[in-house]
Length: 456
Image (cartoon, rainbow, N blue to C red; front, side, top):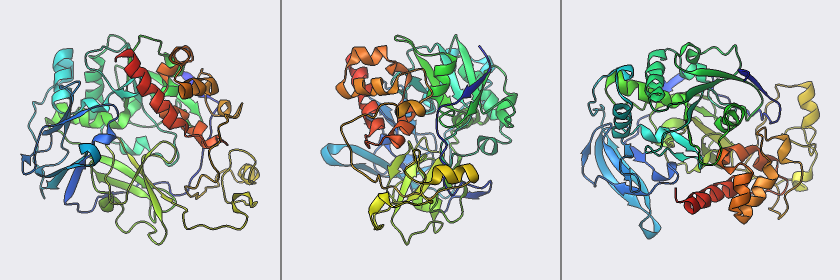
């Protein structure tokens, strides 16, 4: 199989507000949060109570179905509140943060000298396991099942995505330690995907991985697309995936003997005054990330992740567990236009020829856009033929699979490749859908239903 793979189907959306390679530290935040809804598909069991003293690395939650999978604190301090909502649904575990962090101590070890059982136990004990996801179902990996391969995603092509070369610079030792650990957990290959053969970052020096290079437009940076072109998933098979940025805390665990979840987060978007990288931990309050660096004179939407597949979060919310990007957009509820969306214009991006930007982008290919979040139309019960195929580069029939998901036709879903996809793989399909169907939600619901049906 060729090591260079060209992705021709897809769509790049050039939004304004890409983070410049400058790093600042997050502002002061007295409260930190562990948010269970960041982790899809698990039932939380609370391990602490209000008033408990905790350290960075102390387990706060465990999965009721897999008690060995634990979710740990990224900070030290005192548990303020176990916050619950309707029907006692767990919303947050809130912690009063210490001025100086203290850490749970773990042994400093070389993963190459450890057994697979020891490595797995260490990752589970230190709360690193939730970083590993599996296909099928796009959920936290089942530690009792050995994968046929592990896929490390070394780049991201989503709008305003962080620059992996910048975020990983100078941390080759941590990356190599994490790869050495992961390679012990599979009898198959560990694949690492990079953006073209000439990509310059710390990942190119890693040993013990098989490199694959991807050229092309978004979603070339989606791990689902990469799996589909490297080693597709069939029924009964399991593969694991992990983002290269999430290798860093794993490597620090083995090299430094502590749970250090510090990361660089790209605070970006058209409504950010100075887009930049912020050094923080997941669970940090958004107010500490953006401060006065956004246009508060208009209604804003905050998104944990990218504008296509990220999760909406309130202004008083917290950075998501998997988020390495915070996108800030104009909500658009204050916009009132003459004749609405049908007004001809040059400032709105269009995947079709609704607006003249298809022409201006040919003349000015670096043109950027500042959209709001209005969908400009209502949902219709019609899947337009041929739309999804233009932006869906996997060897799967996207329209037919979506129809099977909508009707929960399990047999047809399996035949059409449901085990390979995640909701993010359908993000562009949702974006170009003229019927305004919430495609990602329907795919997520179908995956959950199929998981229950199979008893997994």
